Amino acid sequence: MILVLLGTQHNEFTRLLQEIEECIDHGFIQEKVVVQAGFTKYKSDKMKIFDMISKEILENLIEEANIVITHGGVGSITMALKKHKKVIAVPRLHEFNEHVNNHQRQIINDFNQKNYLIGLQNVEDLPEALKQISEFTPEEYQENNQKLIKIIENFIDNIK
Image (cartoon, rainbow, N blue to C red; front, side):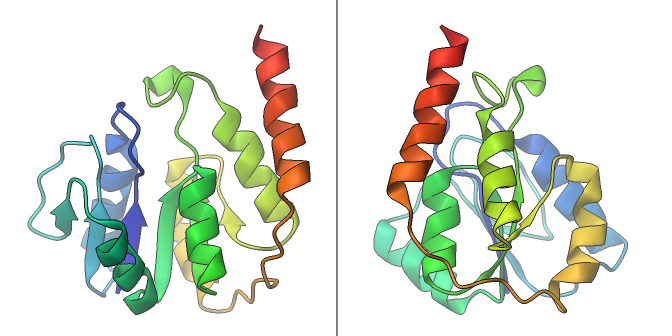
């Protein structure tokens, strides 16, 4: 099962679900897809979509998942990594009204550089990431809250 996490942002992330549906249509995804969509309103007969779910149900779904495809939210990423899941992360982008700025690009890049996940900068790269994920061996996730806090603080300081 592939679990898709869109977080709880008030903005939609329809682009990612459209790309996942295309990957299903083209055979890149052949297993069941479950989506925690948050505020993204999307209808599909190819995916099981929930708006909001409890933390307990979410943790159970992560345990069950073979792959987690997530937006670039730190909470969603680290929750999957702590459960030793293979993760593909895709940033929500400001230019598509998916977030207030593009900080998720930097977050994903940081996790990608450490080889914790396959980090994308464009949703159109998802088919290639899906091809790579079976051979991908992530580094074991090591929490480093201080570095992450510094990255976020620097980003916030630069938008003032």
